[in-house]
Image (cartoon, rainbow, N blue to C red):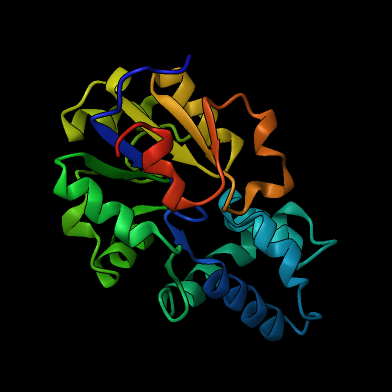
Length: 221
């Protein structure tokens, strides 16, 4: 349901929502393909599924590989990526000003991602974001991950704000499902990767085209 009062906390998915990490992730897929002697991947198709995780990216980058091979190559892919996580990764345009606006108004913000903590926390530290987050919940914090609502509820707890007074923003249908089940308002980030899907079909309370439009959509300013 659509809330009539502005949220007191805004939670975000990470890849494809707060940050454009696709260039560094695609570069890691390309490097792995070179190591394996495989053809270069279709970067546009890999980009679509960045929010779906490493296995999804390898399936796109190495078409025809079976799941056993994907599982075998995943650790090497993550090692390559971890060495160069912020070479080209950046905040989406408008995100920096938006977060500063939240902080100036006392609106808590945090991150709920399926990315493992050993990648998420160093990335946030290297981008100078870790000390600003009211909550960081990674894919290995709990026994379950999005679309289960538990990570979103844990982030609300860490931020000290009830779920009904929070919004969850993401670029994947799993984000919308997790936020809706947790009881937050939900926002589909149409600027993100979207996994090739239509964010208007996900049942989110709002679909927002650009980060700069989010505060107005949520009634924050």
